[in-house]
Length: 341
Image: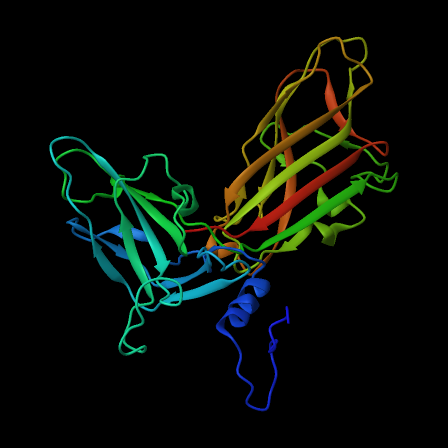
């Protein structure tokens, strides 16, 4: 019959195959491959650089690349830091080596060990002389389970591995992400005068619009996940109105950005600023402005509920001022995400 007779899980002492167990790991992880948590299995030189590199503790998920091993995943765990030797290069030229975490499964290769409980089925290996552009194990076309941890690029006549020789290639198998989309259309009840108008006048930087003067103040306070290594922000000011002061003709220029955290928090993060510069003949026109960035999220801000401010400032220009009115809208798109460290 086509089906395996024992699906996961049948009781009463029924035997189950290792293939079905590995299928469970594959399904549970969506077939993902790589390290499990951000700091896992990082490859670094020795504290005093020498002819070895050290591998940090951690865990990996590895696709079964053996012929016939589709829809199966191995789960490997490195319980302590260990070292592996790197072969020195000769005078004839440099060399690139790939450091991998790999599985050696006697079911598919090699002989069964005499004592099945005394064998390194999971190991760190160095594949020597790979292309210097190699970033993933599967680029090598080898048919066994392994994931790339780092590439070591040694110059000619080199035996000591320095930090500049090691390129981190780890990829998180299932990085966590959390997105918050704040979209707000201004109303006639918003603003400092409850007239739906926010005018940008600050020359040093100020919230624009002020979240304390919006109807959904709490939406601008977000809880930062404990695991958030970085944050992506995209801020959009839609329908910015540019008005001249009387008959005076002048442009106005300045910057907009996003401030992450309380204004007086020493660990707060700011996005890169984006410049604006209006036409010196513009009057009663509307524009769309945007600021965006990808920043490290400080550990001190993780696990806290903090404010997110869209900010701006005037750098020059005398008579024209940008305004947000009840015909304007603002959008703040925030994505926390996890990555290797």
